[in-house]
Image (tube, rainbow, N blue to C red):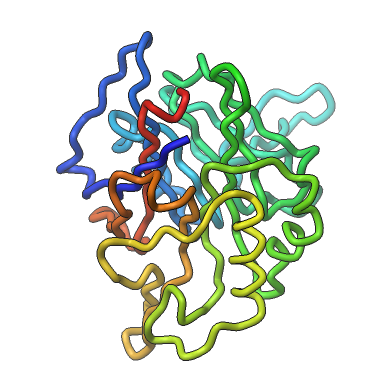
Length: 267
C-alpha cells in the first residue's frame, strides 16, 4: 500500500480530478474541525465535490433541519443532523440520546463501487469513526478521530489495539500537544507518547507537513496558535509527496488537512 500526502489548495484554485466511473486513480482526503458551523460544512460540500473523495469532519454541526410528517404528533417530528448534498454519501454513526456525534465522513458517490462502510463493531464511540473501502482482497481502513480533554480516543485505541486491523490513514483533531509536531511546545507528554506508539501498532506514523504551520488559530489574537490536527499514514518511503497545511477562504474556520492515496494502493 502506498500513500502520497498532499493538501489541496484553496477551493477556487483546485485542479479537478477525473470522475470517470470506471477508473479511480487516487483518493483525496480532506480533514477539518468545522467547529459546529453548519454553513461552513455546506460550503465545503458544494465546493470540494469535484476534486475530493472523502471529507472527515470533527465537531460537526448536529442541529434541527426541518419538521417532517409524524404518525404520533400533530406538530410533526424533528429532523436533525448535518448538511446533505447530492454528490456525497452521508456516513455517521447513529447518535445516542442527547449525545450527538462529534465526527462523521462524507464519501463522494463515485466511490460507491468500493462499498464504503462504517465499522461500529470495531470501536463504538462518538469520538472514533472507522471507514473501510473494499476493492478486492483486504479492506482499506481509515480512521477519523476527535480527541477530548480526557484523551478518550487514545485510551480506547490503546485498550483495543490488539484487536484492530491495520490502517492506511488515521487523522483528525487530536488536541494533543507535543514537541514532535509543534516546535513551540517543549514537552512530549504521556498522551502524545501513547498516541505515537498506538498508531505505530496500527501500521501508520505521523506525516510531517512540508510547510510548518499552526492548525489551530484562536479567535483571540493575543493567544498563540498550536498544532493539534494530525495525519498518520504509512511510512514515508510509500509517500510520493509530503502533506501541506491549507486554509479555506470562506468563513472563519481554521486550517485543514488532506491526503492523497495513489492508484498503486490497490484501488
